[in-house]
Image 1 (cartoon, rainbow over the protein chains, first blue to last red):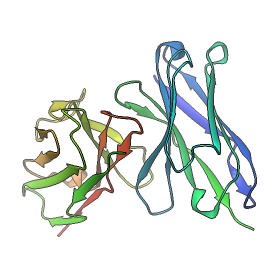
Image 2: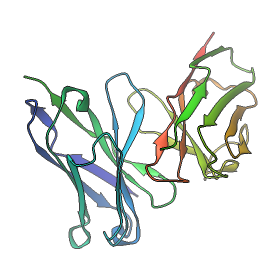
Image 3: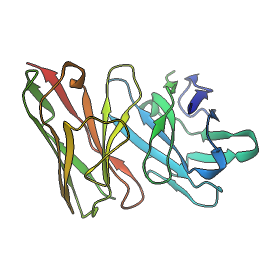
Image 4: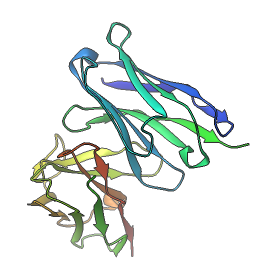
Length: 116
Length: 107
């Protein structure tokens, strides 16, 4: 069974940083591109970043480019998102999602709240 | 950057009725469009990929059509479990994008 479990969210002040993690199991992690998607409270889905299976191709949404950094450790079956320069509008549930072509599995997410 | 616009924002229908949801892209995405269903408190579920292919386990009452800039998700006869929010998503270009969503609610 495919499982994606995020961690690392929390309350952070504007301008602060966090490192989000996603532990993957139930599939060969190194064979799949991975994504981070976020959803602000009561709002829609927003794709924010993708990393290829080998980590050599990386893409970001314009809204997070230069502030967020995606990475992965295939030996640890883990995906990461370093988020910095946080703003109130970054408040959301951040989910990791499997898929180089189409996203087919999602985690339940970790909540990041940006507030003073 | 491709923008996906979904309409209507809310669709109020009764069980057994037909639902027609629209997604329009700001530029051609060929057939690289998917549809997802999301229920409250749950992760999204892939329904349709490549515009018209049903994902594994998706009932035949769900169908997708379109190419280029105009796409449609049709639910032929709404079941009680189909009342949810639906999102379109493109993978034609980076950055990827989701539409704003259509909520299908019980009338």
